[in-house]
Length: 363
Image: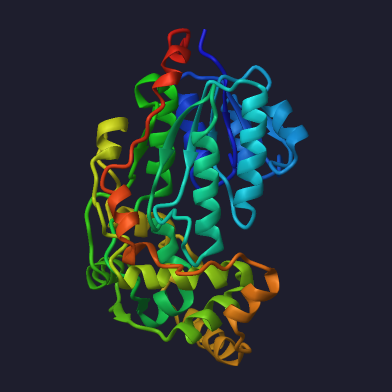
């Protein structure tokens, strides 16, 4: 009998496709969600998943979710990556979870200026220290959907910010990789996988693909950081997230996203080619109402841009100081760190002590 697998953030970008794939493979799935009434949760329930509604930050809920579970896919979500990670790791240790697939961050480093990135590094380290739990880490870079965070100026005015070269992965491919590792985790213990899209593209090449799909001219524009923050603010993104995005834009300027990309991880583990960028554009941007080239949408986009220009400027450094984020000496972007590059060429880690855990796994 196949053992039940826990998927956290099962309503989310990668948790949902991971849960669907495991169900397709014949595995019972417990889907940890905050909102059991979400369309994705209802769909998973229809497909046979057990829906567990709870708070991933509450260790009491995590303990209940891990009852009778041997393996899990853990996706820490912003803005509380460290608290969620420490909570899940504590429960995993208590209940002797046998294997976990953890989503990390490609930039993960202990001296990065982004608090999100520092927290990812700490969570990675906590999970590596679990003595009875095997670990596989997924290390994707900038996700494909992130390129469509501002659909109004992109689709209606053809303005594409320059985030540097990348081989952006799709949400679905990341979820599929997680599912296929959990299907047979023994051979993946102690490994870190750099999940990417099919090909490495420059910003102008991505703009050309977007233009082809939208049927309009799209050009790369280097927006001043101050203006980009105003646009994201007008979109309604929280200041917490916006304050961290600026570091990731800077990473693109230092070619961090294209380092060690593309990889064959999706093909090697799932058995299919990774999604190409055109597929990602058609999946994430084309269904958006603003993708339609209409007069009404053009007016809406103009109104949005006026709103963005009128959005008050704010000081992200002052904001971070007010939040009490840790500030270290000599913090550096990952793309400028020799130490980071040295550990991200091949960054598997030793977990030989866990090998005995896998002898008793049943698919």
